[in-house]
Amino acid sequence: MTLELSKYFETHAEKAIAKMKAGVLAISYYERIKWRLQHKEDLSAELPLIAKVGPAGTMAVVKEAIADYQSQINTAWNLSPKLQEFVKQKITLIVNEREHLPRADVTYQFKSPAGVVKVRITTAGETFKLGINAGKNPMAAQMACIEFEKQLSFIALTTRTV
Image 1 (tube, rainbow, N blue to C red):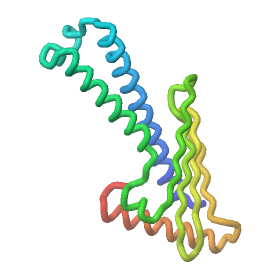
Image 2 (image 1 turned 120 degrees about the vertical axis):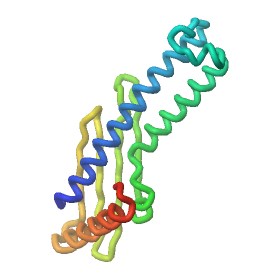
Image 3 (image 1 turned 45 degrees about the vertical axis):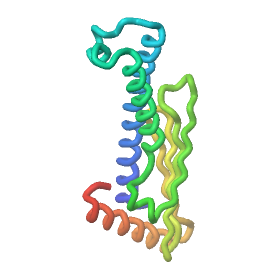
Image 4 (image 1 turned 90 degrees about the vertical axis):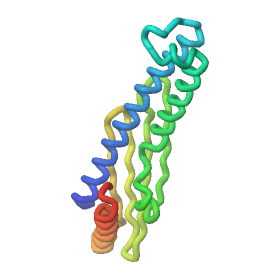
């Protein structure tokens, strides 16, 4: 609908995809270490940590790292906490074993007295499609988008990060 909203959500999508990609790569790395530890391989030459804490301690660290990176993937599409007060979000991640990155189907909805602005982002791999819909009435749609932009600007000014 507006250039500012498009730019904001394009940047948000690019950052979320990058976060998911980093999480997937890290999980893959730690899963390989986990598998090697389960098969009693000696990794002390590759991972000096094992010499200090032993295989059991290393396995605990690996499992915690996997859980942390899985959480990073699951929360990559969340908006900033202050923005979540004004926007309803619905995030669905679809994991296909043949694809490296989960597909995301994300919907954000902002209500104002002028109307409702719906933002929908769908992904496939590292590409995404962005759609912004504020209704059929052009005047009301423009006013609703302006209200949404005001909230984004205010939050950006008060938190220094958007």
